[in-house]
Picture 1 (cartoon, one colour):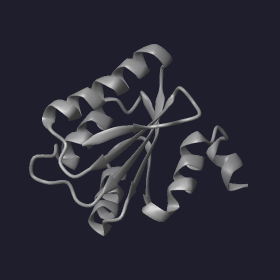
Picture 2 (tube, one colour):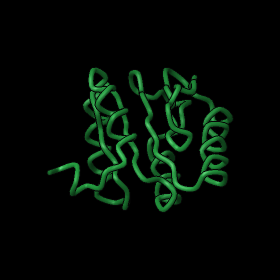
Picture 3 (tube, one colour):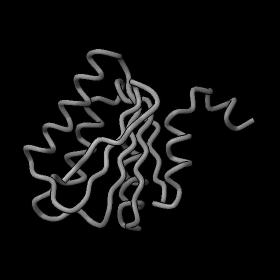
Picture 4 (cartoon, rainbow, N blue to C red):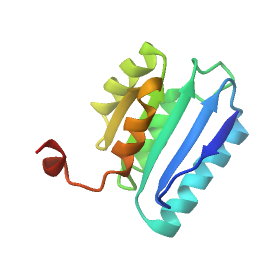
Length: 127
């Protein structure tokens, strides 16, 4: 299942994914992202994942394929999870997609929200 998380900005979308998410629900989630892109332009995403996706859940590959296909439309993509394997996959995907993609532990969710909402340039953020 998935649910939408509240965000302070219209162009920042947050979702929580837990357990099994059907292909239909996954497509519904992606359509919500597409509608926001069409309405507001580039978006920032935060996805909080509990546990490891089950076999009925669309693969991380499908999720990253969507991100790759829309990398011009996604400014930042934060994945908040508790699985080290997901952290590894995020690092691997970051090497292949041209977007700002980061992994955060579940207890770092506040930092993940701060990061996706940050409007400063990378140079300003590192100063």
